[in-house]
Length: 166
Image (cartoon, helix red, strand yellow):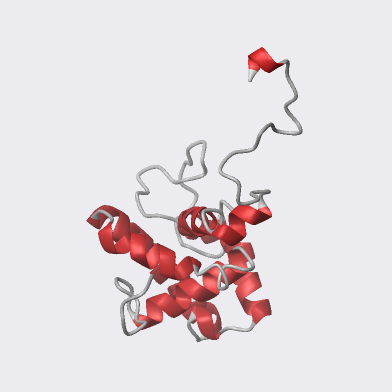
């Protein structure tokens, strides 16, 4: 899933380091499942819009990490990474952390009227979607979900119906 020299196909080395660290914190075991390599491969053939959006999310997390701790996300301690991701997981992460937006009206999702910039939470959710999707598409992730290597289950234990209803 990597180029012949082992370097990422799409991501820069610092972006890849950040993605590896973010992946492992969001879904433990992601490094072993090669989540960052799979995402890099997908990005290498994805649309420019999707590429830009994921790069913006990685950059936002690294930027917030630099702002708070003076280091990129991959260089933080586990506790610092956890603190940053806990903050980012909250819908009002930027506003509660001092983004100066005043007391403007908010819509039902908590975004300010006229605010088109993604929040830290938006970036977190984007990364979480990519990372969890890649992890649970891997053999390790599918096994964790109950996949046994068979192409199909004969039946699903929680779904027992009369034969004609399968």
